[in-house]
Length: 196
Image (tube, rainbow, N blue to C red; front, top):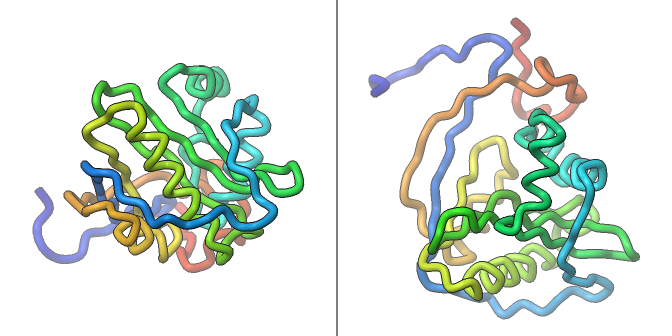
């Protein structure tokens, strides 16, 4: 257990506060699909998935899927316990919804986000209603997720407004993807790079 006070983060790393949230009873906002969008089940190959993953998450330094071996990602994408969905605009995927049903009676919201083209359109609330619907139609008892301070500053409040309840908090330290994995060093200027 960490003592109260400040603790050094090693150079070349990023630290984040992770908040765990859950929902045990489905709650919907009742938001209609914004005009020009289609909600679809998505079956991408690894290249298409990573392209969308980067468009959605790169500004927030999402890196979990970009650093795993390609075969491991391919296995996740093909797994019967993975539910992948998107919002298409003009035939192009502009949102990422990834559900993990690998634990019986539960669903984890692995990834959820919009490209800049959809932010502020109401698409996020609509997509979350679909996420809740798809999760609970499988007869689960618990829908849960983890968000962190590397994500959009609006993420935690959005999840709470969507009906998720915070249940825990942790500190995570990881390699800064701009240092260790070749991410553009101009990404996430709100998180300074401290080179090793």
